[in-house]
Image (tube, rainbow, N blue to C red; front, side):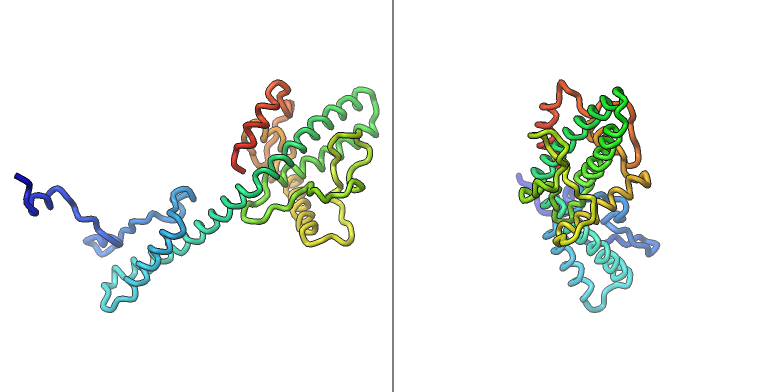
Length: 258
């Protein structure tokens, strides 16, 4: 014989909607404090908007209990903060996917350049060619600034490429061997910069400042090869790129999210 309604109700607890008012008059929020959550735990934008509409309709009711009113106002404030975070997360995800390929290829170009130039610098130093070693060192500094630019560019903004296809060959370093990647001069202030180039220069200079202050690593290629970017730390003596697994690592990196 099927159970009647009373028997069924014994096994099903009612889900309480809204805030919980304790006997002492204090209010327990069902939503944890904003600081206790990370972005991955936030609901989607549409769900948050629906919850906001529901909370605002509740607040608009007449003769609302004072405890529930206070709790609902706090809930609305919390939901508004969550909505801002969720919208930001959506922009970051969209830009991360949109610019993943271009950032990957620019990162690989810079990693190869840093590896090659580090080797050249060591050879020049071993042969006592101080001027050439110094010049290689200057190139390394600029390449590492550019690598940090790629690794730390905010996903909330449209990515400005370091090496757009329209880049003139005259802007590259003419001393590099023919057929090899040539590092463009992007950290020098020049006239007639368009808006994107000006913004790129500003971010590069800010990246340089953060590296000099120790807030960004001065050897980002080391942290990148180990899969972790540790702000303000370096690991002297480690190989920039493992020769045997370079191609495999590059293929794996392409599928990593930025």
